[in-house]
Image 1: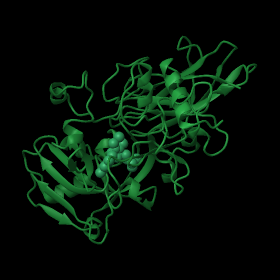
Image 2 (image 1 turned 120 degrees about the vertical axis):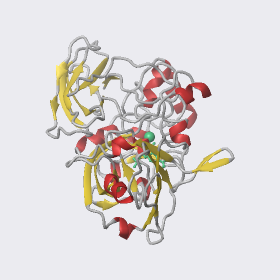
Image 3 (image 1 turned 180 degrees about the horizontal axis):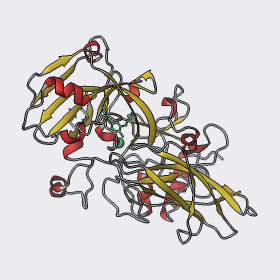
Image 4 (image 1 turned 180 degrees about the vertical axis):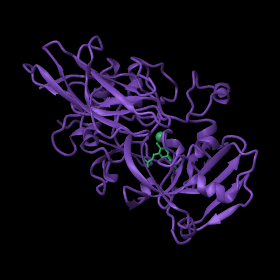
Length: 410
Ligand SMILES: Nc1nc2c(c(=O)[nH]1)N[C@H]1C(S)=C(S)[C@@H](COP(=O)(O)O)O[C@H]1N2
Ligand SMILES: [Mo]
């Protein structure tokens, strides 16, 4: 059923007022963009100005630009590695247009040898690879509206993807530049321009130097990537060079990387100093006091459409689970429930059990006429388990409570 924007908005508003959220029904390629009658998508997802980009038909774009998109959650379940065509996009400014031949990466700050390198010079370093999951700190933000609405992109559960990144190890480059004794943090600045009222500045990130040197033989502490799943990065994902920081929220993996600054403190960039912090209240004092978010917490989500006939006695569910972003931490259990978490049933996990990576799961729960929802929760090898509920925060970050979705009857 297609309805006008106004009516759709009212449907969403009504649905979120009673705290109902649901994944879309899967009939036809664009069906997840249209609201469903029973349990509409939360908070006007994919409303006006959003929609589609014909070159990326598997992604739905959120309104309010520039380019923020996620796939239908179900599409994520088709492979452990997420194809670029289904990989979420989160950009704060327009994609910068970069000529690879004129491109230079600047390395400065607390180094013995400041450097300005071309792509060909960067390619002189030993090639390195890393498979890891990238997730936005705002993934699942729309679920906060069950407590109280939060501004910002109303992400569902698909602002996440798993990819093989290749390029060079940041640790190697910094060893070459020579890091001074007093160095403690590494800043990344993008070549994009984000506009905030009168001001315009690049998107920036920051990581502790200890994370960069968390470098192990099978996993770089941080990667400078030129390729994603074997192909050169597309403009949306940071062409020609981006940082990839395994285990950290996506915001630290700066795209269109233009400058690396080694420092004794975290970056003063707006996206480190003011944004991507868990606040209790959104005041300047709290912002100063709060620490930047780095690692992502344990999480999981149901990605299949929970649709059942009235006489059905069991339902198949599938989704992903992500371990806490610490080295060596993997997903060890994913459980599902159809009685709000009184009884849990173990799911079958995909074989790929790796640090910094999601694990796909599938399972079946019994249902009866009065079953109203299904729930999932994950546990990792360090003993972290998703909480039943989490406290609301003003920016809507790190939503990782049990994923509870209404059962839809057809
Ligand atoms: N230069 C730049 N880098 C950026 C961003 C940005 O807006 N500009 N967004 C960040 C955020 S918040 C996330 S979640 C990831 C998203 O990466 P993707 O678009 O490749 O999925 O990129 C990060 N790197
Ligand atoms: Mo993000």
